[in-house]
Length: 455
Ligand SMILES: *Cc1c(COP(=O)(O)O)cnc(C)c1O
Image 1 (tube, helix red, strand yellow):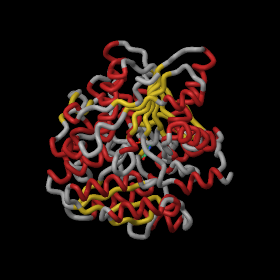
Image 2: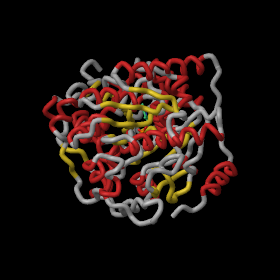
Image 3: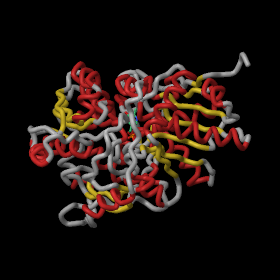
Image 4: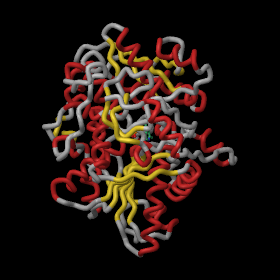
């Protein structure tokens, strides 16, 4: 017992030098993004007005499996990477499961989540192109916090639209962004046309990621030398996040095991893609049989109950049309505390992978996720982000199945962030003030019918 190893860490020179682009290995590539007016497939140039050019190329790159991490980005990764791969002995014991449970601890990043992995990359490419200002949206504030630091690191000015409900629920995330020097506005706001339109119709709108994205894109396209950056959903974001899975692959090797299951929570899919794609490549190329499980909230179930169709990435319809599993771009999810999971659609890569049966999804109720988070906190000493609690709840369900069958399966999950700035949410849970939300099939169908066929 005494020589059993708890955590696995890579030396700095073993931090990966390349990100992994799963698009190159996918047999069925994601369907093309379409121009909303012409319905023609988009080329990288069509995206240049919104995003930095290098990022547009990454978005549509279906040929290069490996993309070099710029030296400047890798240097900043060293501030917190590699992140530990940890064997959850405490959780295994608490559950009495024969399963071997590992988690990749992305909560050790300076801003407390995996989001910094892509924020640094995107800020770098904007700076390299001579951009001076960037805009973005943020839900729970994790992405905004990460980008605020990344923008400062590369000398960019940042304006953040923060979903109003989170702005009120998570005031300290706003303070973090302001500490790093970003300008933060609650969305919907009166500062953009998209925001004004929504507020005129719904004065008490709690905000959603879709709405905040519309505002940020509008600001980017009306401000000189300004680009928009996005913290999830896009292919480029999952690409940058593969640093998680690539490290985990080496670390699992140090542990002498290979995962039977890889589990992550699912908002737009970036931490899920980040930890799963490097392992999924072995399923695609070598016929390995690892299961990949996305854990989404029952109140925003686009993977388990949404529809695959072309839809917009934002509320106002400013983005290209994306082939995605969606609940409809004007779907406003219930005010669950896992703000980072309140997004109506899934990225185009994951949408294709789920269609092709390369991964699966489960949906979880809010109360079950907080219960799982508290158990994990007590067993491992880390308070997880409400989003990450979904991955933990799904992991516990699988570990309990192992208990029934007696199988010692190897489960790896991504701890996407810590919850130390989400204690108001834990307070509500502990006081019994949180509830579950369920959506009827009719509500989902109605919402999809409303948007109709867009392509
Ligand atoms: C943003 C966020 C998520 C959800 O976003 P994905 O792109 O799906 O990863 C999950 N966990 C944490 C901690 C987050 O900050």
